[in-house]
Length: 155
Image (cartoon, rainbow, N blue to C red; front, side, top):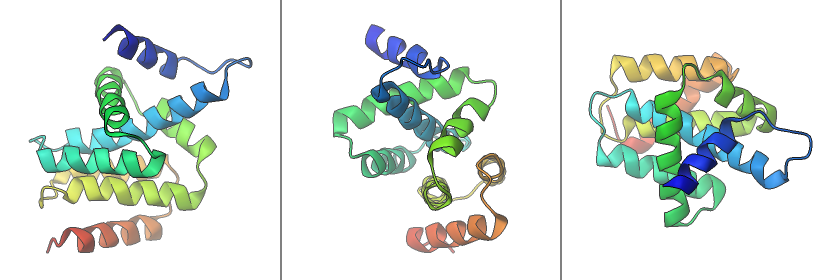
């Protein structure tokens, strides 16, 4: 638990010029996980399907083991709960991801939203807000939504 809290504080502190590259990578992983978790938390019910989708996205994007994914998910929950806004997370992603990677992340967030088969109006709002903060063009946002919806088999 103490290591998890230490990792959380280290990840949200501003980077220093002498920081090792591993710290920057950890902060990027946490930022990505927080956005996925925020989509999951925006639903009234935290479904196991949504949690599994977040873990799957994290393991796939960052080649994490099951334990690493679970630990990152726990850190992301704590960070999302304590965040007053998402700029600290979206700015890390904007600095590190190219547009294709950001569109891929938006699609993964849509997959989380559709994992339980229901898209709530609040999930839709959170998705729009996060994709705006990531500077994803509206056409790419809609295309990512349609791909995720089709993959989920939702009408």
